[in-house]
Length: 149
Image 1: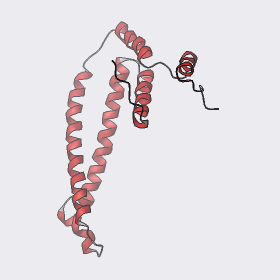
Image 2: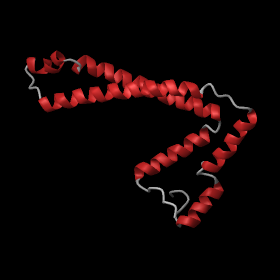
Image 3: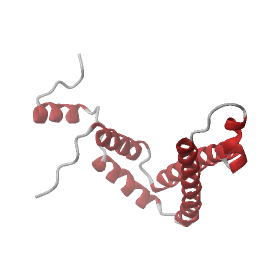
Image 4: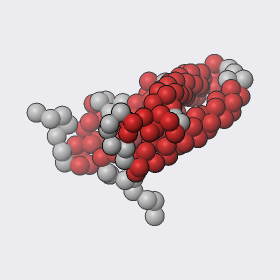
């Protein structure tokens, strides 16, 4: 018996985003570019956050600076910040590894007929949720209104 998809709000949001990305980027080339842009934006943001945190909390002297300035230093908070910095360093290392692997994906070029197959499959995998037929089917299956009104 097939397992039902999770209905929690986080999973539902993921399913909607998943389908939207397929609908809006239905070719191999578009998926390649989308994946690359997502990876680069993640690396940029995570890298900048890491740099900023290392500037203010990166070494022992900087971590103790608030105590020297009269603010009480919370050892637990300092430990948590050091752990967060270590975690971000690991994330950035993984992102660099993923980038190296993704570069191989960009070596692949396919004929137009294959790109057309991607478009066809995208329509099957993630049909437009506002399509009239889809809305009617949803209403019949779930007995809920098509749109809030």
